[in-house]
Image (cartoon, rainbow, N blue to C red):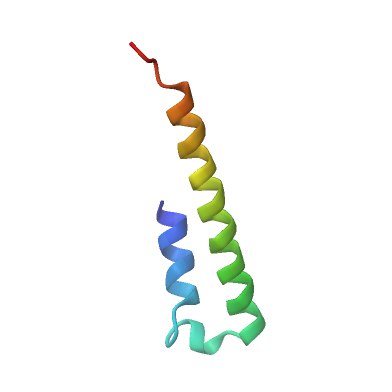
Length: 53
């Protein structure tokens, strides 16, 4: 979760992302989207694996 927070800080407008090229900020934003999709998939798998007693 700390990685996602750090990436969001980089992608946020203003410092420190203001010093990065626009393409770097775009890459970070895409990485965040990918991480979010993996997180959602992980939650779905874990829900399926829960014991149903």
